Length: 582
Image (cartoon, rainbow, N blue to C red; front, side, top):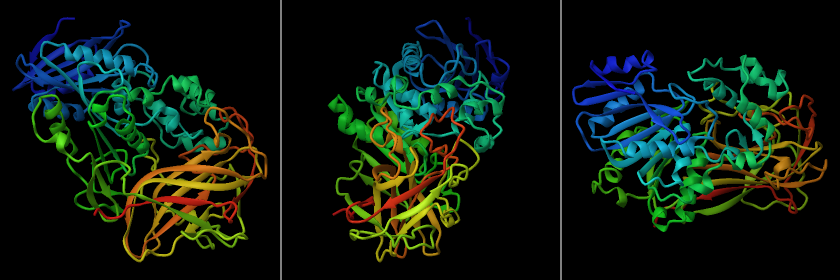
């Protein structure tokens, strides 16, 4: 297709995107050239659409590539394109297959590795390119980067995967076998080539609209991925075929991994950084990974506050300038000190300060067990639950509660799939009888906990299947119960994500609950708290307790739950205590 050059202001050129979806157009304004709807061929003949912002002139220029399902409409891409072009880069933003002006049909993840590789090759071989391509973007745009990394395209020189989720069965749409119903609104948004209106809040009708597999009808849609996801509730070939993390270990590409302590896909960034620095097949790649974790939600570096919590004036760091410095080194070859930077830069909440480290988790970390205790009445924050480093006694009584799938424990979250929870106050939730609450004495001195969080729970249920949840909380002196992080495990997957095993009712079992990680300094007078229950809705779909199929099930069973914490059946929270640097 022949390109047509027209002279118009850049802002007007960008607005033409809404009407020039089928014709490639080149517009020049000052020192910037913008090309709309450039058709990039994939190996199977499908053409994907890209908009390209680059300095005027022949080049050659390094390229920053962004691949997105969310379309290049509005001012965001225009401003980003102008920024990168003014700094000597070609900025290429491409609609992924089946989205925007790209041909084909969109299905999450299945084409991102090959399409990303082919796009990198095309960009790296253009007459205006210097042959070096860097990738950029967050969330699904992070996924589009990491899926190609292990293929090691010769033009791919550096990556900045921001808030990139892990393998899909690890977090989205399943986490330890538990389904996240909020993802239906994401699928609705991306149903077809244009962005769809998503009437937020329908997901909360799940309790009245079983079976779960029929939820897409509430939106007047038939969503193939929704049905495929629910048809594969175990870690089977469907999910391993959509995975990338093992293949990522083949990568030889330098990576800057970015996330936030309240990013709801945080575990992807932490796992990718840890895996690459310890297990990457190329020893050089192990030394070329950097990590930044800030006091941010899924939308990183956008402000100093999340809800009621103010993380201070240093919370925003200017990530785009950091990305520019990063690409200046890897794509332009500037010796600007990037390779001498500390490998890990993390924000310590509570102290509200940044810290540099050499690895994650920190080598000097001490993992300390805080044991659950009570006289059998740990229900609610007014109960007698205690969290303590002291080991339990032989005769310590168990705690009990009733879990009703029709009345699940609320998970505090905005009515949007884009962010699940934050540093919210859980005092109201802790008044429920189906929430067990265990709390330490106030800390006498500031105490830093920075690293992975894990719960070992010994529990029994009257049901054939159920869920167990754990929430780690920072209790302020005024009682504010700030969520730090949480985790869940489905009982049938207590031993294996691929081989479910139903419960023997009443039989105690050991559950390991991964609550991901946090980094917080407990100030003097603050207390550490652990909540134990069996649901977190709408973050997770309530377990119906029948042991049947989650997607098609309609019947609910009330479960009587027992949590043990005696000498023979210890339940405890493992926290990462980080001493000061020597």
